[in-house]
Image 1 (tube, helix red, strand yellow):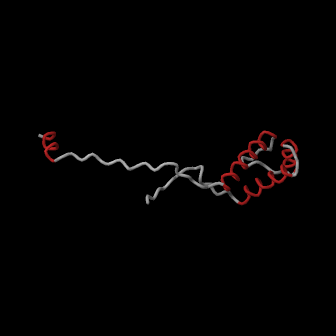
Image 2 (image 1 turned 30 degrees about the horizontal axis):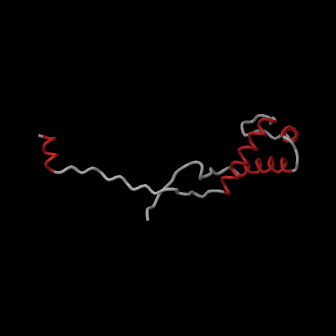
Length: 105
Protein backbone atom coordinates (compact mmCIF):
# COMPACT_ATOMS: atom_id res chain seq x y z
CA UNK A 1 0.00 0.00 0.00
CA UNK A 2 1.24 3.48 -0.86
CA UNK A 3 0.24 6.62 1.03
CA UNK A 4 -0.40 9.66 -1.12
CA UNK A 5 -0.86 13.25 -0.01
CA UNK A 6 -2.81 15.47 -2.38
CA UNK A 7 -2.88 19.23 -1.97
CA UNK A 8 -5.31 21.05 -4.20
CA UNK A 9 -7.80 23.86 -3.83
CA UNK A 10 -10.52 21.80 -5.51
CA UNK A 11 -10.71 19.36 -2.60
CA UNK A 12 -10.58 21.82 0.27
CA UNK A 13 -12.65 24.87 1.05
CA UNK A 14 -11.49 27.97 2.85
CA UNK A 15 -13.37 28.85 5.99
CA UNK A 16 -15.77 31.76 5.58
CA UNK A 17 -16.65 34.20 8.31
CA UNK A 18 -20.03 33.71 9.97
CA UNK A 19 -21.28 37.05 8.63
CA UNK A 20 -20.27 36.25 5.05
CA UNK A 21 -21.75 32.75 5.20
CA UNK A 22 -25.05 34.18 6.50
CA UNK A 23 -25.10 36.67 3.60
CA UNK A 24 -24.45 33.91 1.06
CA UNK A 25 -27.21 31.78 2.56
CA UNK A 26 -29.60 34.76 2.43
CA UNK A 27 -28.86 35.34 -1.27
CA UNK A 28 -29.24 31.62 -1.99
CA UNK A 29 -32.54 31.42 -0.06
CA UNK A 30 -33.95 34.45 -1.91
CA UNK A 31 -32.97 32.86 -5.21
CA UNK A 32 -34.59 29.55 -4.22
CA UNK A 33 -37.75 31.49 -3.27
CA UNK A 34 -38.03 32.58 -6.91
CA UNK A 35 -36.48 36.05 -6.90
CA UNK A 36 -34.36 36.95 -9.90
CA UNK A 37 -30.91 38.52 -9.61
CA UNK A 38 -32.15 42.09 -10.08
CA UNK A 39 -34.82 41.73 -7.39
CA UNK A 40 -32.32 40.20 -4.95
CA UNK A 41 -29.93 43.12 -5.54
CA UNK A 42 -32.77 45.63 -4.99
CA UNK A 43 -33.83 43.80 -1.82
CA UNK A 44 -30.32 43.77 -0.33
CA UNK A 45 -29.73 47.42 -1.25
CA UNK A 46 -33.14 48.26 0.28
CA UNK A 47 -31.94 46.70 3.54
CA UNK A 48 -28.86 48.96 3.31
CA UNK A 49 -26.57 45.93 3.18
CA UNK A 50 -23.17 46.50 1.64
CA UNK A 51 -21.00 44.11 -0.34
CA UNK A 52 -17.84 42.76 1.32
CA UNK A 53 -15.96 45.60 -0.41
CA UNK A 54 -18.42 48.22 0.81
CA UNK A 55 -20.34 48.82 -2.41
CA UNK A 56 -23.92 48.22 -3.44
CA UNK A 57 -25.29 45.04 -4.97
CA UNK A 58 -25.97 44.67 -8.69
CA UNK A 59 -27.68 41.90 -10.66
CA UNK A 60 -24.31 40.84 -12.12
CA UNK A 61 -22.74 40.57 -8.65
CA UNK A 62 -25.66 38.45 -7.44
CA UNK A 63 -25.28 36.17 -10.48
CA UNK A 64 -21.55 35.71 -9.89
CA UNK A 65 -22.08 35.19 -6.15
CA UNK A 66 -24.73 32.53 -6.72
CA UNK A 67 -22.56 30.77 -9.30
CA UNK A 68 -19.60 30.59 -6.94
CA UNK A 69 -21.80 29.59 -3.99
CA UNK A 70 -23.33 26.71 -5.98
CA UNK A 71 -19.83 25.53 -6.96
CA UNK A 72 -18.86 25.67 -3.28
CA UNK A 73 -21.88 23.56 -2.30
CA UNK A 74 -20.99 21.01 -4.98
CA UNK A 75 -17.42 20.77 -3.67
CA UNK A 76 -18.79 20.22 -0.17
CA UNK A 77 -20.84 17.29 -1.43
CA UNK A 78 -18.11 15.68 -3.55
CA UNK A 79 -14.71 15.64 -1.89
CA UNK A 80 -13.71 12.16 -2.98
CA UNK A 81 -10.57 11.43 -4.93
CA UNK A 82 -10.29 8.47 -7.26
CA UNK A 83 -6.94 7.12 -8.39
CA UNK A 84 -7.24 5.60 -11.86
CA UNK A 85 -3.74 4.16 -12.13
CA UNK A 86 -0.86 3.40 -9.89
CA UNK A 87 2.47 4.27 -11.41
CA UNK A 88 5.61 2.59 -10.10
CA UNK A 89 8.14 4.88 -8.47
CA UNK A 90 11.19 5.68 -10.56
CA UNK A 91 14.37 4.11 -9.35
CA UNK A 92 17.39 6.30 -8.89
CA UNK A 93 20.21 5.51 -11.21
CA UNK A 94 23.09 3.92 -9.37
CA UNK A 95 26.48 3.96 -11.04
CA UNK A 96 29.06 1.31 -10.33
CA UNK A 97 32.05 2.47 -8.30
CA UNK A 98 34.38 2.09 -11.31
CA UNK A 99 32.19 4.43 -13.42
CA UNK A 100 32.33 7.09 -10.70
CA UNK A 101 36.12 6.93 -10.55
CA UNK A 102 36.33 7.27 -14.34
CA UNK A 103 34.22 10.44 -14.19
CA UNK A 104 36.18 11.99 -11.34
CA UNK A 105 39.72 11.19 -12.45
